[in-house]
Image (tube, rainbow over all chains, first blue to last red; front, side):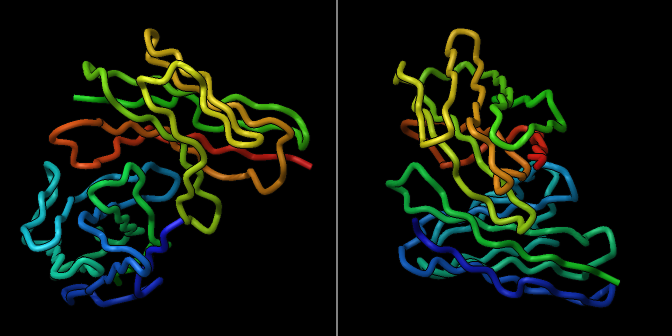
Length: 115
Length: 117
């Protein structure tokens, strides 16, 4: 299957700082990328859908000014958590697909800890 | 709006035995896909099996098979000859198909499966 990478795998930051997480499709062109948040032992919660070259579509209740998503190329999307607070600590997962595909492929996730 | 429900938060099975995980969903759509994903302790999401709603035949992938009951909106996963490596959290997911499809997956709450030696 297709490969999606995320960087970093773990990040610890101080409250009030911003953190950027990268999601890359390594062997295909990702016309659509998705960002999820997952709390321990819970399901994946979709935060936003991003299509290459256009603004991300955020799910209800997700603050777009807090979680900035950029999908500037067909292989890279970034999620920036701005002015992070301890409640933003979570596991963030991206996935990617080509628009003609049924399946989406998941990255390995990023564990964010805000102190 | 579509919803996916997994009513079994935790299950366990002895190695080599068979276990069935339940999933029900609600939708007014007629054209869609259903998936089972596995998330082992590494937390990497892995596609286990996929079912297209217009296909009556149940999907199978080696030891994994589904029982798809479209009228009942039920989509259970059967794991045969359970192995220790099957220990994971399993998610049922729904995806709308057709024009306007964004590829968005709607996940159930998940079932944690423990395979015991």
